[in-house]
Image 1 (tube, one colour):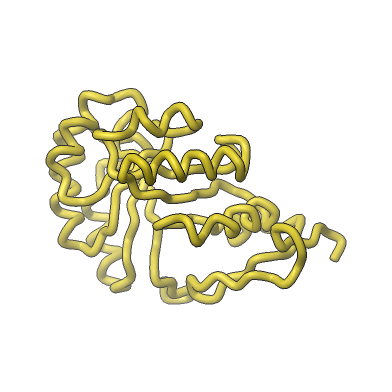
Image 2: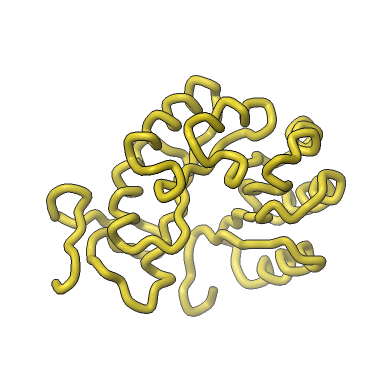
Length: 196
């Protein structure tokens, strides 16, 4: 955090020390935290953690419970002081409507839903249902990140740091400056494939 200060950090949790981890990280930055629980919590435990995280500048919680724990998600949805974003519970177009009343928003991953066109339909459906929209990534190169960048005007949150996590990228395109996204001037989705 000191070497690379960013305005937002996504923190993956799911340990028996989640609260301790966030409290310790909070000592080093005032940046917004977004938590991805990776489906590791149980409903009652999740609610206790979320109530604490609310006061530690956490913006939302991604996939707090197992992808098929709909009963637990209903309980959490009705009581959580922070927005809950579906990830593993919302993979394809057919999943968006299922998430209404269980999550406040959905996380769309282009590599899971099959690309930009299905993602656009998922965004439209989520908006019809009054839900927030995030587009996320896993370990996409600049190619996948260039595709994600095309959707930015339509979404609320983005996680497109894939190229920053790669030792070697197969393309060039979108770049970042402390959380600010800089588009390239290239055609299409704005990428150039190696060799450059």
